[in-house]
Amino acid sequence: MKKWLFLFLPFLFAGCDTSNDDMPTIEIVKLYVNDEDINYRNKIDKLPDLTVGDELIIELDLRGKKVDLSRFLVQEGKELLPEERESGIFFSFAIGFNEEVISNTISKPEEGMLAFKDGIRRTNLEIKVTITDVVNEAAILFYLSSKGHAETVKTGISLKLSNSDTPTIKITELYLNNNEKNNYCDNSDDLPVLSFGDELYFNMKLYGNGYGLSSFLVYEKKEQLSIDIVPYDENVVSIPENIGKGILDFKNNVFRTSLVLKVNVKSTADVKTILTFELSSKSGFEGIKETVDLVLERE
Image (cartoon, rainbow, N blue to C red):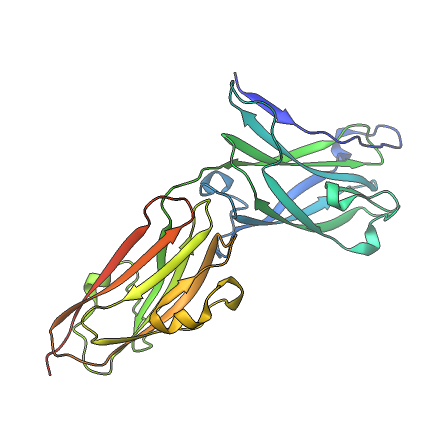
């Protein structure tokens, strides 16, 4: 039998019971992972495995129906393995809300609890959740009460958490000469023969998969290509002067980032060359290497 650990905060209720038809409701309107553009609201079971540093953006629609809203609470639920003891939280969160509907004297948003002012029957919340630890299985739980019921309604988002010793390089876009009609990110072998002056545009995402990123390196040994890393997030790079060498050295606690590479053909002395990407993390294990084979038209 699964053992689930729930950390409950006390609710304060007011009013008498009404019919079940007037129970408040919690609707998940938006659910995004990191910077993906996929809304998982209707396909929570399709959520990818998450790891330390991953972020969820959740928008909730709260309705009290015919009665006023009373309290809202966000908490964690996590499955503990038989040999595990109770541990710390596995996520941190920040709640975005309309201050005009919240009672500042009672609410404790830093603890996940909001109390509503009188007359509030509907509002939206945006919750940003950041994974900070990994357990076997976990859930983000939401509770809502109204001033007409002594019971709460509950909904949740089940999560699968895992770390990997190997980081990930994901090419999301690969265009030739700004032709965005043909994206070769999944089939770089289909790239046509390149000529002098041709430009490749790479949009890449780097993931530490639970560990901080250490360094990223891009190179081509035959020096037939010029490589520029632009743009990049200056807040994550520790040694900016290495960027011109095709090296990104990352600051501490950088779990993922994205970047753009512009690769120009400056020589076709040889008909073949290889573009190489290497990424390492602070896991202490060997990183990952990926290559793109390019065919050039001889001068």
